[in-house]
Length: 211
Image (cartoon, rainbow, N blue to C red; front, side, top):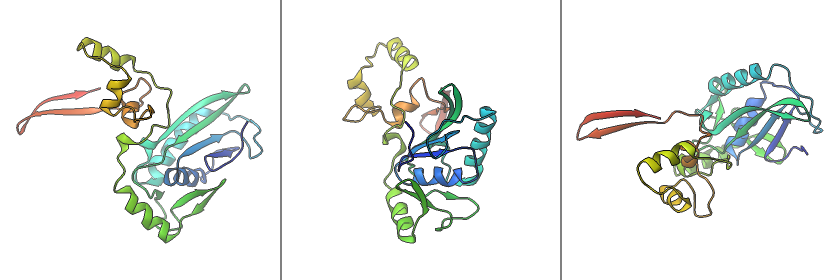
């Protein structure tokens, strides 16, 4: 069931090297990291998974630049009766991502090649910098596609507005193939982020709304 690949990394326990795997996935095409499953695919589980999640959050926030938290999801999952920690990493829009202590150079920037995370070459780093200028977070595919919109649909209903797939595509919540974008994720019931909006009239702030 579990095998390391270009989009999956297995780790028996949390180590500092996990930051390199997160960077590599964010710089390449995204992927999933399991903590509590060994290289052979055996589910071992972890102790104190909540503490591991807290450590991961700190490692990601403090150890990776630019901020990659918007492109990572950390949660626990029960597999074969054992608790493991799952990290979903989406390809970021501010590539290249790098280890904060090493800076924007080969020793700090990693990419995914097969089932291995390797240092990026200078040419690869330059290419990522050039490509990131055109990336828009809201338009990128959401790595989570099992989304529901009870709260958003209720608000649309209150305003007597339709909220079907056609409207979702028009708003940019889905792409032309029907896949959810990150904008869809931000408006979904599964969104773990705060979305703030300011409404202005002329040059004066009229209202500040928080969802």
